[in-house]
Length: 230
Image 1 (cartoon, rainbow, N blue to C red):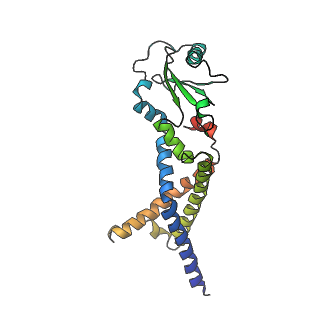
Image 2 (tube, rainbow, N blue to C red):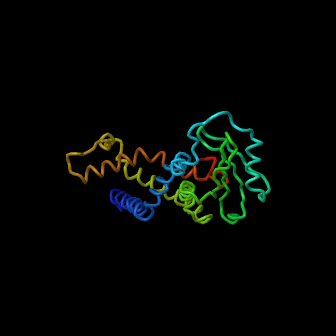
């Protein structure tokens, strides 16, 4: 087979792989990106959706940790074992006390009890389970599609598929050294189709490196560490 035909066949194969990946799981890639981006502001969004978690006019000093924990244990006298206290992220925020394995959600992958406490008064303001609020549900959608361990493995597979999509895209983008400068031009005078193609190629080129980091980062997540990452 002539070398030119072989290269054409290889390119066609890579193009099909890139295209079919986008058509089959492209929506899930976008969903992962959107939910992950929004989850970076999980605490801010949670306070926006739940105004009672915001202390409008902070006064005085924080109560001692012992008093805060005593208030939580008084509100939950039948919950035995360890609690984890997370201090407020700002002067207007609640302290959060975590109970890792409540009986109500014991068989779920990750669904601790989150107790919101006013650090100035030791008042228990809210008792919520992870995954049952809008922002934690969104983060669960990002990390495991709300499908427990099956979803966790599925998201891992999506990471591998995204890596393949990036590699095939970079292969298809590479024009060779002689034509390298032409690939950075936008043919805005050649019609919308060519402009859209050039934008796709350039955006894909510059977004590929950070996107290829995601599959590696995904391996470092564990359900017990979700609250620490976001």
